[in-house]
Structures are given as C-alpha cells and as structure tokens.
Image (cartoon, rainbow, N blue to C red; front, side):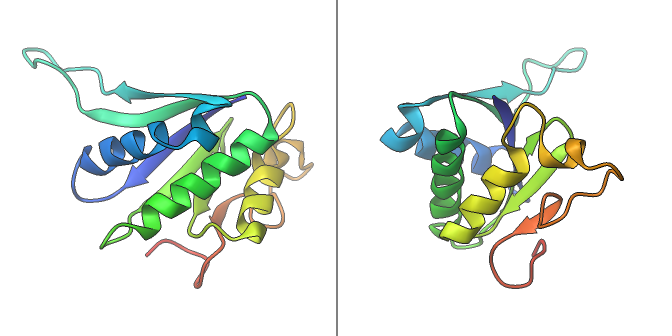
Length: 141
C-alpha cells in the first residue's frame, strides 16, 4: 500500500523535512515501511524544488497504524503543530493525535485494496474517512 504524507504549514519544506527525519528514526515505521521525500519539479532556470510530500510504501495495515502514531507524536512535539494529512487514492485523513481511536479510524479509512471512500456507493465516506481524525474540533487549526 502506498500513501502520501502532506504537512500543511507556513515554513515551506522545513516541517516536511523534520517529519521525514523523525519517521526515519522510528523503528516501528522503518521496519515495515519505506518513506521517501518527493520534490517539486524545478521550474525553468531553477536548481531544484523543495519537498512537496513524503511517499510511504507500507507492507500491511499495522504499519499504517504505526505511521499514524509516529506522525501524531511528531506533530505533538512541535511548538506550533502543523496539520498532517495522509492520502491514498483520493481519500485524505487528517491526523491530530495518536489515540487508539484515531489510529483505528486512519486504518479503517485507508486500508484495503481500495480505501473506504472509494468503496462507498455515494462517494461520501462515513466515520471520518475525509477530514479530521481525532483530537478536539475535528478540523484543521
């Protein structure tokens, strides 16, 4: 399973780079996942692009849960916690905390041959498949 991790913030790719380093130091993530940064394509005359997203290739749903917990722990360690979104095949989940309920909902929303939202007949997923997962307010800050 492949997911993309996006960090919304005002500091460019610094937060994404920090999260990338954090994930590489977490044995729960690196045991069952490969995480790589993906850069923007440079424009004409530019030397190179900034990091845009992190791609993570996971071996199973338990690895997705570990990734969600690690992302939430990194977010909690930041003085101004940026919004973290995990995306798969058009389904986006916002990670706000590392509670067992949040991890369960992230896995339920994104696991399987196709994510939950893609399986819903009307295109609208229930139980947090789109939008915030966990934490107060259920939405971006």
